[in-house]
Length: 103
Image 1 (tube, rainbow, N blue to C red):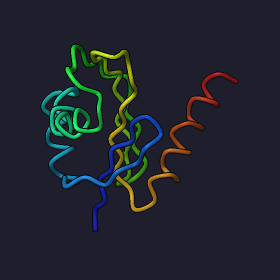
Image 2: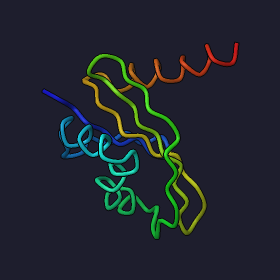
Image 3: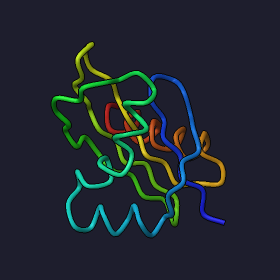
Image 4: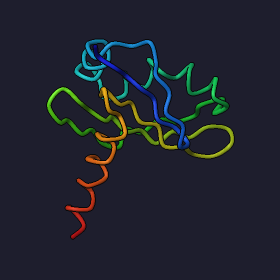
């Protein structure tokens, strides 16, 4: 089963999206997957989203992390959409990618 999560402000939440929905949206426009989770992000308290910037995407087999920088009424937050049955594992691999780039 394909598990899709939203990771925002150190909170990981499973969302009712499929891998296919996210990847199809991403193929059309890298900002589109965020629109699929915008209501959920605002529900978490990050209301009145003003600007969304696509930051990066990481693919590891069927697993992925898509990262956005989101400006909202109260500041800025990082939002990640993650597909994995082990989301913390793929998130760790995503962070390791940056460690390799900065070494």
